[in-house]
Length: 407
Image (tube, rainbow, N blue to C red; front, side, top):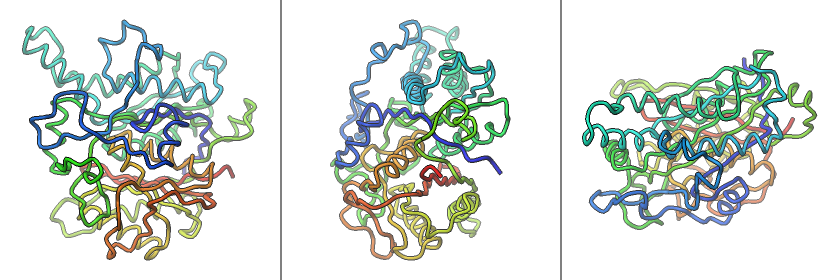
């Protein structure tokens, strides 16, 4: 069993705001950030909406000009989110042992923009340029590598590729690294997105992207009008430590604790066996040593696809009972952020615990009655001590994490 990891720093970059405070303010106000795609001309595609980050300038955030041609937009966002998390934690990496800080990131789609650019170079300038396949292999390692190099972090590193579940899986890997007494802390999380023509086509091929033109009706998880999701970009990075290590450097309070986690895999399609999201939730609760009654809110994966929404609602009902726990999906304001989505949900859950308010699910007018879920549609002020975050990645990945108030 992994030791409980405490969250001492957090950096958020999302369509709803740059920084945790801005994101949280917009989320509580129900200010959805989904609109027409600006990153490229999406006029010829059946889907034309996305949750895009506005107002981010890599140069203004201190990314050196020499790195711009070498990095993907998502890597630049991840670099800044990691820097904000480190600053928020009050950490001076140079003051810690040389191999004392590790880095774990999650990615699944961010390499599309870089790959699109490099493939264009390949076609236009010849084979001396990086191939599309090489660009993806490079991207999956670059987030961790660039963060490590930028801050001189020489501890253990890793990259997790489990699509939307990746943000939670990366934090779980970081928790495991903290079992090593030589690892004092780990910078971990996910920042992702694929808002480029190549990435857009790949996402459309999944059949899960909404083609509704109205931003307020395009992404409606658990709603009778659910018809797919809207893609987005962004995520969150965290500084994780053991409570012992945090106290040793003078930290007396922190955002919260990742008290439990579990991952499961769904059986092959057509096998007739049920999905395993419920089991992931139950195992995460078990590791946290909590009962379902101890959970104050569930942050849903919220696929926006009717059969997937029903499966998630059934899993939640099986664990908590009909209408047994408040359920929210603030990602309706940002879109689904691939590997960044669950990381952003966990950041939002931490803020929910801090301020004792459950953020709303935007635009959903009335959930399907048969689902039997208590969907939060306006901010709900209530004590929040523990939250369950659920995530599912295409390919059968399930992840669940329990985050609690400082215990």
